[in-house]
Image 1 (spheres, rainbow, N blue to C red):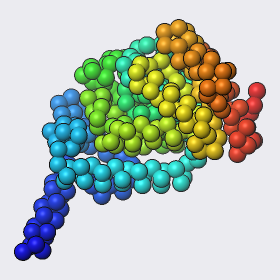
Image 2 (cartoon, rainbow, N blue to C red):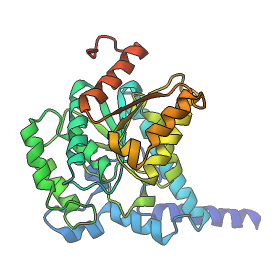
Image 3 (cartoon, rainbow, N blue to C red):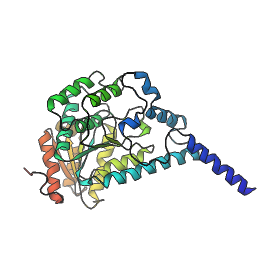
Length: 327
């Protein structure tokens, strides 16, 4: 009788795992085309039925905190597969060349800072780095747009920005469609970038410009992954509470040399980080008082200065001493 009950329970779990709208045996990262499977840029209504939207609706229906053991298991298995796929990705791409960009999700495509981040990301990608972000809209999208447009002329980037300006906010209809139109006009086959979004913030669509997408259900794992994978340093662009959390979480890792070294923390936006949200000022003071150690802090409005800080670290790490010119 007990064996019959156990067998019945196991079969019930298996049936549940087969019925969820995502693959619990996930073997690889998502491509933007796989994540948005079923979406047609020329038919806005298809966004409501594409793969990413179906999974998000399932996620909300079953609870942001899974209401059943079966659902919790399904999400855990999926996220484990994504973790394994990230390990595979980084077996082919050096952590020390990975540059993270953190910043606000609400940054409009028409904001000058959006173009600044895209230009900075484009330049770094062309130099041999690869870019990482939370994979959502705003500064995150600007990061991957720049990486996607690597190898193109600056005039072509400006054209792409004009195409995107028809839907400045991720809340605007056409936000995803305009991104796919840019990708169709300017295909990318050489450079890669990595986005790590989450279905917890599924109301913020993932940027299609990331060539590789590690989308998680569990946001805490996702947040930690973003900060720990960018060995080459993190650029902090203006943001709000989420960006502040990331700053101090990163500072802790660097303080304790969690990975054997400290990576650069580049604050991009002098006025913002010293007056509006003076995180740089606070960290600098605490570092000078010895409360934080091993922090490689810099503050700038100049993309060239930001790049110089990242290159300086590459020479200090002495892994690629001849790859980047130190000015």
